[in-house]
Length: 517
Image (cartoon, rainbow, N blue to C red; front, side):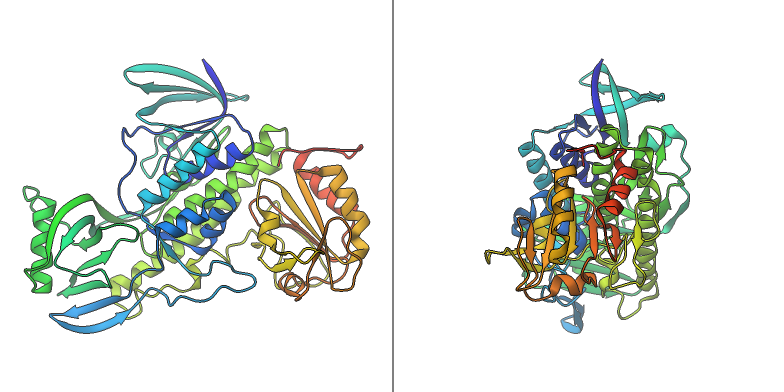
């Protein structure tokens, strides 16, 4: 029997994100997937701005940027006539608080490949053709049975995470109810294909009565995504069916579907598990929530699940009080419910044929998601500001006292907590907290030009940090490892931070202390 801290079942974007987060923290884990080959389809190709921030923290932003684009202009045709032109959203420039404001389009197979490459850099790997066949749990852990290459193996893990998709074996074995709706009358065929006779400068939509056929260049590849109603004749090949559908809808026999590399039939399926946790077993990604593709919420919500769960599992394994890991379920169920509301509202627009059905606004970006009022959110100010405890911690430009440009996200990057203490008078508190809790906590004094610069000072020369956080002198902001604000105090003290820290990590200060973050 092999022993690990965490067994991850499912190596899609959710499981891979969680694996990377655990690897960064030195947690012993295994990640398995029953498929014999890595996924090769485009499926979820829209990466939302909040997920781009997660990928920057994981260290994979550059390959993600190299693999995608901002999305194509779409044109609706009636014959050769263009009857509509637009895009999901007009690109906007970064701001002081939002460095990645646009949806970035990358095929899912490439996103997964980049995550696997990062995992390999961190010393991990996916075990393919390995299936979870059974598991039992007790107060101390989970005993799982795995099957691979005709052999059976028993694994003992302190926690098991089911990131194994909408048909999750883990969820079914737990008996967790998965309520929702599946509309068999609302279906669509999605296919990745090589197409001749058409340019890649824009996407094309042809309306055919109540149906439509579309061709969209797939970022970072020589493929197109073809969308049409599913075939009724199962004897006809998908390639021949799509070739005929495109020719009939467009009136252009010169457009030729040459090869289909992947396809799937989507059904209107909206579901949310009643629980994301049963003892030492947790659900993440599609195992806990299934979304319509409208709005690009499914994969992004799953990635955020993994990002939320990784540091909490590491803390629990290091002996943190139950409060820390217990917060995963309420935070992420609320997030999944909000994402489902967004995607279903957009699907309704498509079903009604609204003119703006293809438009995507800031509600899909994930930047306004918050954990206000949650178990880890503590706001001790007399009056509220532009952000509150539980909100995403905004970025801002700053400089070191020596004049080197930095950003807050540079300070946040990594597995640690970050404290911003405003005003040079907070320098002694910053020094104390770094001494007590470093390196799990990195504390910084945010100063104005002309204020004394101590060892851990950050110069807010343009005032963007104070403005973004609505901070006055003596304000303290404690930022979680996943980039959300845990604690804000208007006149913050060492004692307030220590009390919050102890509640989550179970430590009493008796000198220098190092906590797994």
